[in-house]
Image (cartoon, rainbow, N blue to C red; front, side, top):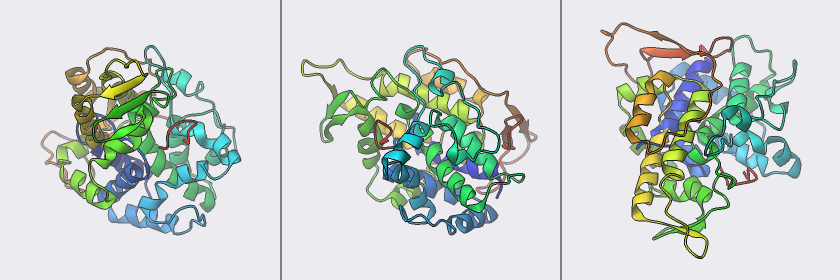
Length: 347
């Protein structure tokens, strides 16, 4: 299995659930959609390797299809107090709005001690570090045991989805939207984070397989090539920008009862974002034009990204067929990429 292909197709899938201009929100259905789309774009060897590794999973918390395994990290987090304390921070990066930084949100990027498995890493860490550590365990030089590689794969399937949910990469002193009460016509009432995790996803349908098929049909070859590459840091920044512009940026004023009554325009924008984030990761340099085109504010976070190098094939190269190498691949130097209950929410 090549880590870059696995990570990249999962990122394309995470972007695809956003077929508008934002990020998919994740309850179980959202994660199942991401995994199903990822499987659609895997080459036959990668898909076989993924299925073979998941077949070795002995956990009884979920089934062992790729869609079911994408929900395992949530099931594990909720399985015991110890599991919650060990892993709940890994599902998000609370970049404060405004003025927060990814470094602060990721607890200053704690290093994984030498010889320590990614699944036993520091509890105070974020999805950015965990994705990179898990990908390393699936790399060609990895010495990780098979059981640890199974965990790494399950965490990648889940955390790439989490990372593309705007409220898993942003916070407005509200536990990622969990403390904001909201309501909307036809959607009932709840908290902002839960609406992004489930209600806005549900508008696409109740069958994750049919929703995945619908979203796959909207992904062009150009989309695929653009979203295939990037870094976890850049993906977190993308999701944060969507939180700033839409999840938080379009909120109405709170009413006298302390509730944000979401207008139809907010719901429509959120659903568009959900339709588009499962498919939006791309090289950082190709994102900024899109950000400028729709972003009503300019609150940027401070980056802590490794330099990204992109190898581009000649411009005469034809559009890439699904399952083939795209014209551009970005690498993070020094890594193996050739390339919550979270205390809040459910995704």
